[in-house]
Image (cartoon, helix red, strand yellow):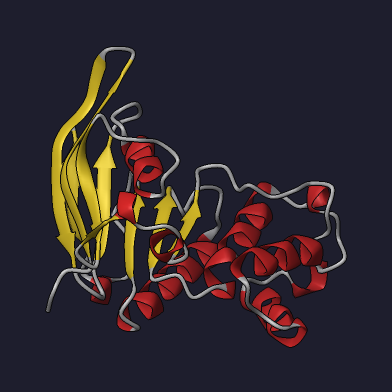
Length: 206
């Protein structure tokens, strides 16, 4: 099976200190890659580079054998990024936050949005302002981003943060379904990603 995402010799420095050097990997449909490393090792920076929020000092990223710098929306429309912070708007209700995510993704009818809220366990809180949610509930709402679009590449920064056991199982289920559907995921994490059938690849940033 041919690689659809290739990372070649990525290097990044911060304040003249090298975060990482010469990172290369190829991912085929169904691959899950977990990136381990201590705080400050560059895990989040790597994800930011992959989603276009930061430029590397050296190296290239290829999507379906094309340099992403030569692509406009084709690559970025296939990305779903969930950062360490949930990125939820506190002034909007749960439903309004989800609706905004759907508009950005260009998907999901009202009925589908209702199903998404049920899937992430927040249907009861649809009209609740996000400011009133617990940290774990806000994290669940952020995860809804993975359900409203058709992104083939998921970039997840510490996806288990603030989640209870049920929430962690939800992440595992979403990853397994995404992988079986031919999607790929790159996950910055301090802990191994489950479930066992996922069989993720991994590397560690020093």
